[in-house]
Length: 134
Image 1 (cartoon, helix red, strand yellow):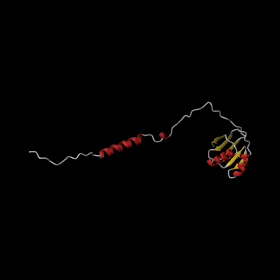
Image 2: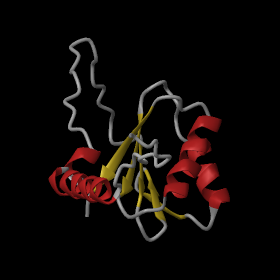
Image 3: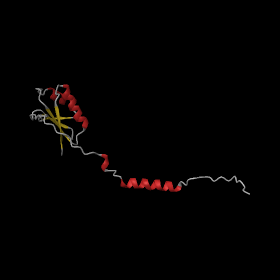
Image 4: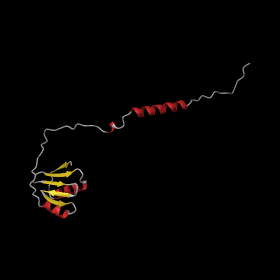
């Protein structure tokens, strides 16, 4: 005679080996991925033949030095005296030519922006910016 048993077999999945496999996969992908080189793209920008580089005379040049000295057509000004610098830019001849604004690489960005604002205020619309490496 066959007795019916009420013991049901519980089906379960053991999770411990799955966690080990997941951690091994994470370690594999971390070790094999390139972290440093993949952050930047090297691009070669296209060159155009229709653009003409306009060179300007040395008479229209402002040079900003990293100690706060500004040369306007070989006249020396300090960044601390903005009124004299503003007057010197006002007296410059605006004949529609380009203007060169040269700044040393260690000079402050706010100085360059201040001089650019002064040039824009007096109608110098075409300004070429150069960086002087020291």
